[in-house]
Length: 378
Image (cartoon, rainbow, N blue to C red):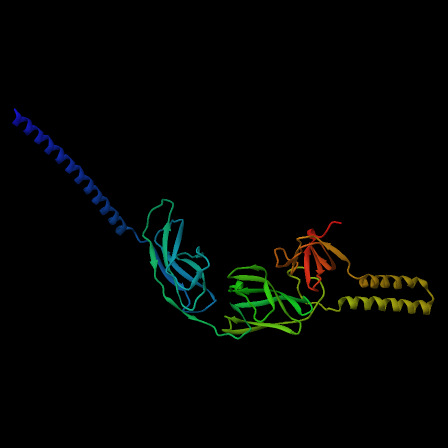
């Protein structure tokens, strides 16, 4: 009887062990099949994108913006998009991760822009992925590229740190800053240029008032505070079109007129007001002669009006009250450079006004601009 019990227990244990073993074997087998299928699927993914470089430079200059155009062929006609991953690049700043695309009947032409930031640089590897509405997984295509020959410039001292296809001075203006300095303000536009790198050499103070960054067409409103003794301000940039340095010169013609807008900074004749007074005086003198010759007092009107106008121009600037905490701007530009903040109420001489700004002369003889909202109400 005891033997039969032992035999039954042994039989049940053996059966349970075999079942567990079978379960484990089934799990392992299933896992191996899954891995095998996944590997097979990765290997068997269809290659549908073919990449080649259509345009790319072999030699670039440090600080230059350049482009690379890929020529892409897809064997899938109906797809939604082709995206790229750019990896393993060195000494370059990628300016657009989404390319500028142009299509023809057969090929897609995708253009990327880069800024050279180092003396050594290599192009990225481009990995393209095709997407369609059915969310089908296709094989990715990777295009390997090459290193670049980078030229580092050895410029003169007046180099403004600009490498561009073109750099054009639109307009400029020079005004008095203080007893020892003038301030030069200018607008410039550039193509194929990192305009934010602009910097002058050997000036007292400088800065950007506004900037529009674009590797196609960029713009900048810039100021430089220079010594009163200077008769011109000059700087150079590297001209990619000419493959050499180009010099830009701004003559220093001091004007006391207000800066009206960012696009109206052209130098004006500093004797403009004096010229107006002379013309008015000449008219008054002619009217006096006519009165003496013809004895017709109707010409008195041609004496009174010009003399009144001369008196108006000769009126000294009035004082205005500036609030505590008012910001004194270098130029009448929104979000412009602030060079002083008042710590108490000031009464300053008004020199002029433009739009929402009033031009004032500070106690240290510097010229600045205050917003209308910072003028005392009483």
